[in-house]
Amino acid sequence: MLRLRQVLIWMAAAIAVATTAEAQSPGAATLTELPEGLRVRANGPGIRDLVRPSLGDVLQGGLITLLVRPAAEGVVVAATSDSLRFAESQRRRLVAVPWSGVDYVDAYRGRSVPLGMLSGAGYGVLTGLAGWGVIELIFMAADNPVVDDPEIILGIGAAAGALMGAATMGDRWSRVYPASGAR
Image 1 (cartoon, helix red, strand yellow):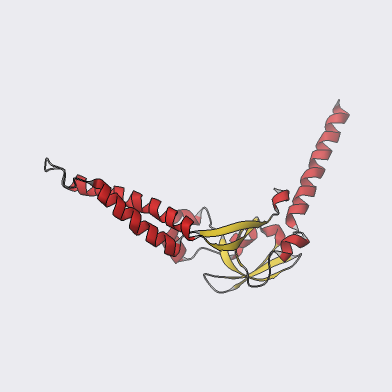
Image 2 (cartoon, rainbow, N blue to C red):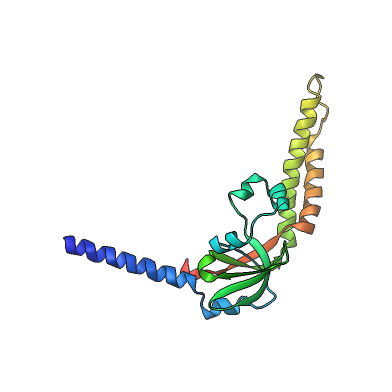
């Protein structure tokens, strides 16, 4: 029984080492999906060590960005079997990271205007709802509601959000590393 347990432990260790080694070096198919000039976002311990959040990142994303670091975005310079090199978008500097320091790489696949409009409309409805609530709270001392038809405020918020979302939201990304079969 003790011998069987040792064999199982050795097998589990061998499988863990094999999957770790497999995840650290990308295959040829992954490298062909990362041509020079492709917009990517990547994250991992090696990237977090090289790309520190700026003051603008902290002001935009909040203090939580110091703990939970967002992925770094950039443009691929070279993807070899040893490392990933990309020009970071925010600071316009070259980042070279060995694959062992990369958890994942997502490739930019364009924007979806309908998806952006839908997301923006959702944010617009929430903003309109919050605005309506603030208006009602401010004028709560008056016994009559200020806004008789809150649907108008929600509709305006949804329309404004949809326009904003069509212009700024709806980015589509797909995971290229690790390959879908390796997860």
